[in-house]
Image (cartoon, rainbow, N blue to C red; front, top):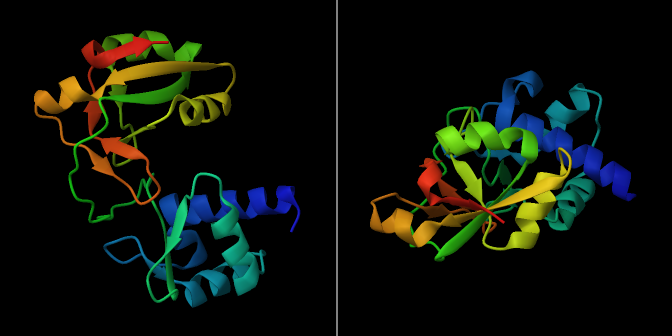
Amino acid sequence: MERAQITRISKFLSLHLRHQPQALGLVLDEGGWVSVEQLLAGAARHGLPLTRAQLDEVVADNDKQRFAFDDSGLRIRAQQGHSVEIDLQLVAAPPPAVLYHGTVAAALPAIRTEGLQKMKRHHVHLSPEEATARRVGQRRGEPVILTIDAAAMQRAGFVFYESGNGVWLVDQVPPQYLQPR
């Protein structure tokens, strides 16, 4: 498939596996999983017929590894970023000493006052490397990279989780743990 088609399908999957499963007639289980067969049928009903081979390519090609198949290969879910109620069954883990978050300058006044908030998602998303945070921030304009003192947050009792694709998750990041780069 061409890059544009892969991106279009990835955005479609993100929307429906993270935010609007009901629009395709899908019901995610408590862990966020849905059968591949149901996903493909729902996508076809919604005007996006996909083959299993195309789905496999989109999942394998996604640079952020947003999606995962279960061990059987018969179910799929988004790795994180849900606004619908699910339990990803994540296990708390000690984070790297420093993590990063990409944003844009327009968001900085609110972030300086309130810190990073999960908003409509389950967690704030943090990156273990600056380059990933830069890519995330670029989606909305010129990126601003924030450095998070994750070690100090953990010492203060904040709980971190690492998703299956290496994104670090936390409920919030208060402003005292943030530094613009």
